[in-house]
Image (cartoon, rainbow, N blue to C red; front, side):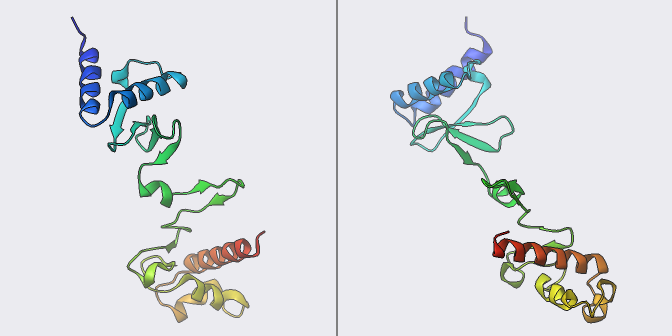
Length: 169
């Protein structure tokens, strides 16, 4: 008698075999063992693009190639690209869509240029307004009615961060 888990594993292999040569399936199973992933095969989520087999990680966000580029992790969604991460130099890379609380990036607003949240006002325009100190953040709304003092401070802070990166500091 086969257990339910055994049936699931067998169906997984049959499904994969309908799209891939048996050797690739064997390679994938070997890769699981190489990485000490020795749970029952039914406990893994495996997907294919008809060229290789990928293991979907526990949180469902990354794919690990088990055949072609054994062990390499691939991004599963663009959300992984947009959210904050740390680069190889150990620098924090900000959230792409909302680099500051009051700054946002929308593809169809101002060509994807960062703006004050909920407006079409470019962040760098507000930062420039505050740059020489002649306009205080709490007075930014006199020039741009929908820009709060905190949004103006976020714009100035983000501009300082962008300049710092440009200068390589």
